[in-house]
Image (cartoon, rainbow, N blue to C red):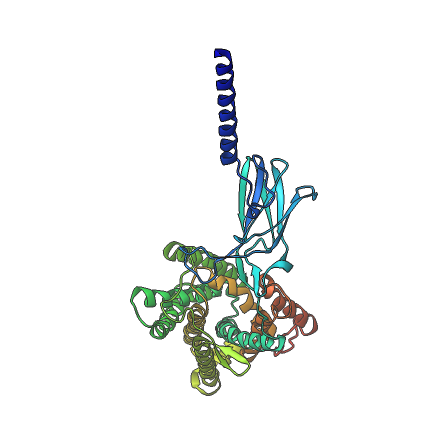
Length: 443
């Protein structure tokens, strides 16, 4: 009896252990839900999550994107697995082991009006080193909209080229006047552009003056700087009979000195004025322009017109043209050549300072802004014809339009200055004296 009782007790305990073990196994290893996809239980896996968070705050979860196909391949290109995002926007794919895998989303399965934004596009490369789930998120963005038509882009590029060409024309006009009266090829002319931009920034940010007033003060200070530069440096060199080659080398040294002073005082970062930085463009038929761009064009045209009329009609303008044609004959005729040259330095550097101020309004201020434009200014003066004011203006417009239109024609933005220099080379091969230059016999 006792043996039967013990046997029955043993059977009952064994049955209870079996039932308890089965229940524990059911709790520890539940049946996978359909949303889990085919991921490995213990090994490595990749989980792709597609959630649309456009227009919502960070506290909101966003809208899952179901029904999107996902494929995983190894670093050798062999397929590893596929999955489809479930109602939670999640697709899991099991991996055979650690390594480098490529996850690709099929863009054809995305909902209409959406696309994968970000730099990676539809593919992501993942390095998997540990067991468990490696989660990847693909950002969702709006579908790209059609850009403006080629004709509209060409028109706006031409207008931007005219605006940029007028800024170059101000600096080229100053360089051409100085070269015409002194014969000096001034390689520090780019630093005069920077001087105008930095002084504008100082009056605007430092003293709190409006941009228009700060730009006007920069023009006055630039003219004074040109006068002081001629009195302290260039006039003594001329009186000592220094050759033009030696003076050109001095200008290169002056450019290096001024550039390093600018970097020391202003710093190497790029800064902006307090006004007219970001303005929305308005539509004027096929042309889109911001208010500051209209202001730049009007001010540049007004300054160029005043200077050209003054050179053609005033007594100082006639004296400037006489010194430019023949300094020795002008001196023997009673003209004060040094006084005329000083006036030219004042007007030339004031125009160049105005170019720097307008350039600061058009983009931003940095210590190398004029140095980056120096080659374009030389190209404009050489293209139009050395020593001719109208040639400098014509060359500047060609350079400005080529710089701004070349990206529309397919040239990368980083190489847009190359187009203007190619035009310079071609024109000089056909017409070495420039567009409006005169033929001269040498020797």
